[in-house]
Image 1 (cartoon, helix red, strand yellow):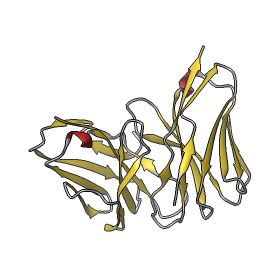
Image 2: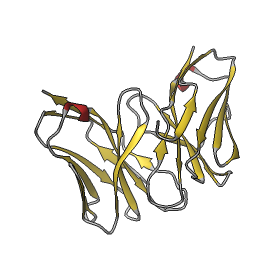
Image 3: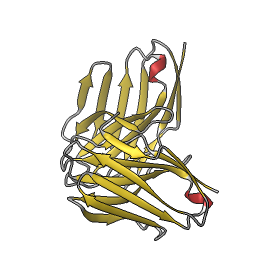
Image 4: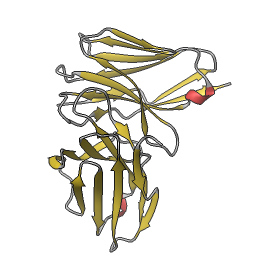
Amino acid sequence: ETGVTQTPRHLVMGMTNKKSLKCEQHLGHNAMYWYKQSAKKPLELMFVYNFKEQTENNSVPSRFSPECPNSSHLFLHLHTLQPEDSALYLCASSLTGGDGYTFGSGTRLTVV
Amino acid sequence: GEDVEQSLFLSVREGDSSVINCTYTDSSSTYLYWYKQEPGAGLQLLTYIFSNMDMKQDQRLTVLLNKKDKHLSLRIADTQTGDSAIYFCAESVSQAGTALIFGKGTTLSVSS
């Protein structure tokens, strides 16, 4: 375990379903991130939260809705997804500074 | 714009040295990172270098930075089969919670 915990590890959902991904860290970090990792593409930044405030939304479709109730928890709410949204969704956290980011193990999402 | 480029594959024999290369475009990058991703796992921070440094060594890992050419390399000495993974180069432009820009990753395959 890295200190960043993501649940569930695997998720299969239909295009009409609503589900949520959860990320939790108790490292004392104040920034949290959602990344999408698809095959043969670079990691795509989706959202950035700094001290619970969203500071970046990287042109992500509205069918992805983030929530950050406090500095330790981050959610990604999913609804009416498309098959091309199938990917590994990675959460990361950091302190403001240059000492790197700690990633969770990811949620492998399959949209059917 | 920001872009990080890496070669996609590298194959070496056990005991040899591996050198993974990366180029980046943003000259204002403050930190450059190397991450390792094993199958089914998230990204693990291996090492990072501040942009005013030329070299950093950490046990079997040596990072070289050529800021003029915007070229970063990771050398793994005495490569082992357990080093087989995907290696990502990443840059950050500022310190205050800004997300990282990743390359597509280099798949390192180590044969015995």
